Image (cartoon, rainbow, N blue to C red; front, side):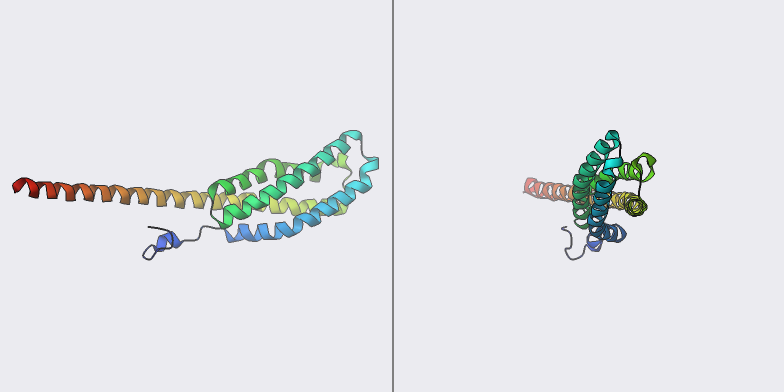
Length: 178
């Protein structure tokens, strides 16, 4: 049966993660604030940074900005619409580029980290860490439930085919006897 059709109480189960969605919601509002603080402090400390760190920080800001927009979109779509590929993409983008980059910005003393900058990086790292864990459990639950639904659908389809074969053989026997 279709999702939400009468008699299918298990199909109406909501798989979206409320804690993950709340975290994404607040992250959407926090990211522009993080970006403005980070860019402003980068502008102030740019003249005293080595050329090596200037290049790295500008590259990181571009990479984080683009990745974060895509990551948040995938998180919203994957979680709210219960789409496994999008949620998996969100989880991977959180785990691989974003979290290591923020940890690099937080712990590399060669970047001449300002206290305000450290504070916003800690908050961003906390968002990312929570989202990695929450998305993992949401993905696990979603995949298990969707796999169970698929198996049940296949079972019912095979059962219907078997019933149709029995009905056909019953009618054949009646026709042969006549």
